Length: 124
Image (spheres, rainbow, N blue to C red):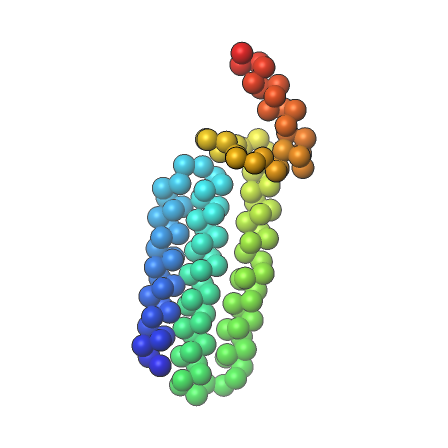
C-alpha cells in the first residue's frame, strides 16, 4: 500500500511542479489560469487519493477519509467554475491573448465582436 501512496504523491507533486512552471512561463493571463487549474485539480486530487489510501491502510477513523473525500470533491466542483469566472472577468476587462482565440465564444457573451471589428478598422 505504501507504494501506491508514494506513486500518487509523486504524480501529485509532478502536476503541481508542472503547473507552477506553467504559471511562470505562460505568455498571457488565460494560459496562466489554465496552469493554475492544473495545480489545483490534478495535483490536489492525486495528493488527496494518496491521503485516502494512507488513512485506509493505517486504520485511521472513517471521519478522516470522509473529510479527504469531501475536500477532493469540493476541489473538483469549485476549481473549474472559478477558473471560468476569472477568465470571463479578464475578457470582460479587455484582456486578450497574444495570438487571439480560435473560436471567440466570449465575444457573443459580451458583444465584443463589434468592438474587435472597430479596433481593426481603426488600425487600418
